[in-house]
Image (tube, rainbow, N blue to C red; front, side, top):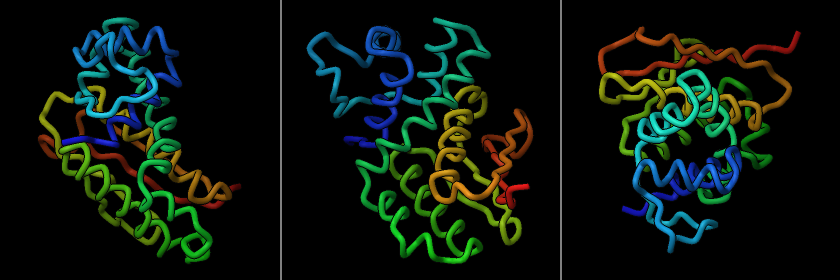
Length: 190
């Protein structure tokens, strides 16, 4: 399976780390060859957890988590370029919808695309009118993967409506076994 989602993540890694360090990280996880075009990562396969572990080995645990958040944020630009469904969420038709309609719809589109492309079941739970929970079903012991999703959600929300404030929360170890949960509330700017 050719994953454009992973290609977007790979390009975000290059953007955040730079070409030289990105190549080192991809070599550590066994997905980069000297013949690979560094501008195109088509057909590349890795897990977000493998990426986070490689970052932790090169830097340290806390830096790896922070980099995963930054990679998540940076990947949105590429996801919008690669997936028409995501790009269309920025169109005026979607932006004119009331918040309580726009956010559940848009977050569900993103969750569906992430779920189908990454092989991890991602779903959105609606807690209240403007409060949501992003759930990722993954093997237990996933330390770094949730931080990617945290960054992606943060950037996605601000792209969807920069006039609001978004409170995201991820509590490591809380939740159902094998499920990572990120809380999201849409709030008015104060």
